[in-house]
Length: 143
Ligand code: FES
Image (cartoon, rainbow, N blue to C red):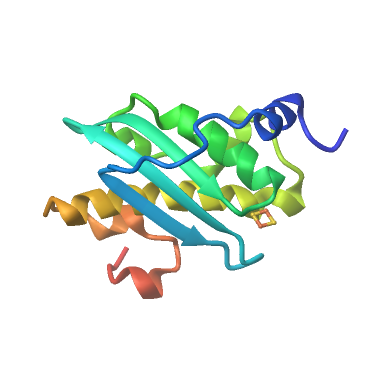
């Protein structure tokens, strides 16, 4: 079977779909490969992600990975959420077909963008390298 049961479950019953109107951080990212977009909303209290929701016009794999990503970061401190990688999300879903791996990047990037938005809005200093998309031309840091 192409997709794991966990992927199918999160695709059919995605967790945390929707919008948080008074979100503390919002991240919107587009997938360079397919043009799909993803919006991630975070509620943050004392450095902890107390609530998270997402909206996507992405494919089924993007929905499943975002759903899993929201479950993995809910209730977690920001610095822990920042270390979430798309590989970890894919592993938690028992894998994705190789040609669908790019879809999982959308979730990771949207989480990071939403945390960055929160830091920016609250003038909280951060290390730009934490938000590097590994395309170091744009991240402006040397590492
Ligand atoms: Fe675009 Fe999956 S094909 S996110």
